Structures are given as C-alpha cells and as structure tokens.
Image 1 (cartoon, rainbow, N blue to C red):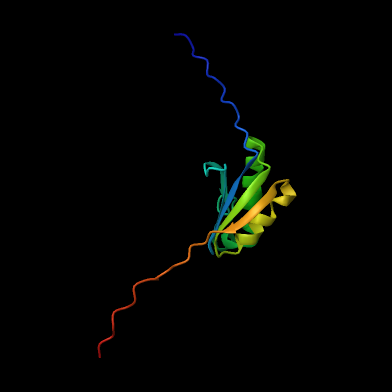
Image 2: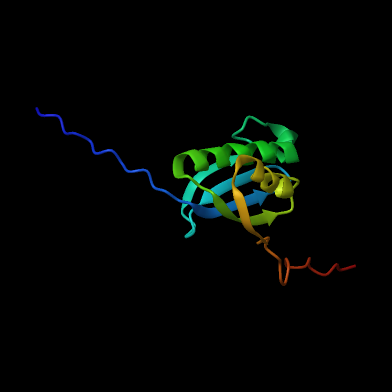
Amino acid sequence: MAEVAKKKKAKRSVPSGQMHVSATFNNTIITFTDTHGGALTASSAGACGFRGSKKGTAYAAQVAAEKAANAAKQSYGLGKVDVYIKGVGLGRDAAMRALPGLGIQVESIKDVTGVPHGGVRPRKARRI
C-alpha cells in the first residue's frame, strides 16, 4: 500500500485583526480574530491556570492576553488590532494594556457591552 504524501498547509498571514475581550466578574476570555471575525487564537484566565476568585482579577486577564497575543503573533504575524471590549469585569483595561509591550499596535478601542432596553419582567402584584 503506497503512502500518501500530506501537503503542508501554508501559514496564513494576518497583519491586522481584532481582539475581543469578554470581561465578567468571574473570568476574562480573550479571542484574536481576523478582520472578518474568524477566530485565530483564544485564551482565558481559567486556561492560564487561575482558579476560583483569582480568575476575575486584572492580573489574570493580563496573563491571558499575553498568552493569546504571543500565539497570534507567532502563528499569524499579527501586528495591528482593533479592540472590542464586552463586560464589566476587572480585566477590561488590563487585557488591552498588555498589547503594546508585546509589539502589537492598538488601532481602535470599542465598548460593545450589551445594554438592556426594557429589562426583565416585573414581579406579580402583591395581594394582601
């Protein structure tokens, strides 16, 4: 039986992309995508070894951002990013501030946190 030679997949070069930060009180998830939103690399505070209440800290978000950014830079040559921040956690700013030290330029910063319009259904009226 003849062996089939596998073709080596060409590394895709993505010079500019997006960084999506989801910062909750319990965790921070960082995803690097191309300009169309297709995921390249991702990391979270939990994936970096932080557990429990430490996952929601600014330091954990910074470590997660560095890990994801290094992977994106090495694998895809990412150099410029537009930052999209969602959520109200402590990792909002910390994740973004880790980028310039790694040689990734921040083009723009946008807050895409969801805003409720209408809210939840009120409780039923109390009968006495």
